[in-house]
Image 1 (spheres, rainbow, N blue to C red):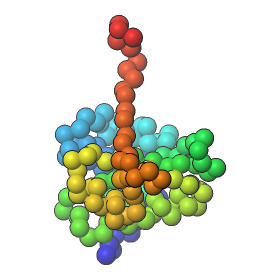
Image 2: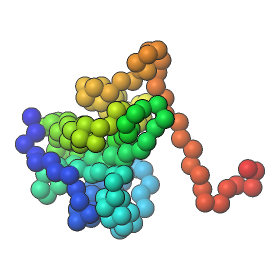
Image 3: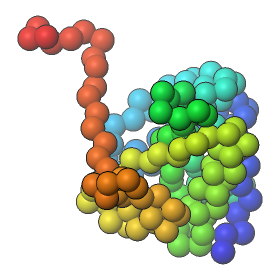
Image 4: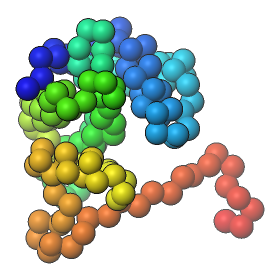
Length: 161
């Protein structure tokens, strides 16, 4: 069970959230714009109503970032758990589950009707973790696999479009 205290981040926490998000991307060889750019973005996002972040521990050893949006299929908002990261040396102690619990509690406060998360197919540890936390890999009504597709939209589209 986790002993790390979880708190909802404010704009004053933007630098701490940014450092952990940058560390997460670097640890998994994923591009990052860097902590300064992330901090600038988070200052604005955390001041608004569309984004929440949660920090675990002091000093922070884990972070969750969630965004909210309306959706035609649900009466209430839908949330996306954009990022969940716990430093390697602190894993296996329930900190990730505590962060997800904080996200779920906040989502319920906001009357969110659906919480989504995207996981790489090969990341079996993450898939198992999220299934333990109540997320489904299969569509509830059809038992078909749920897939997430994305397309980057660069500022200058290629000539072929």
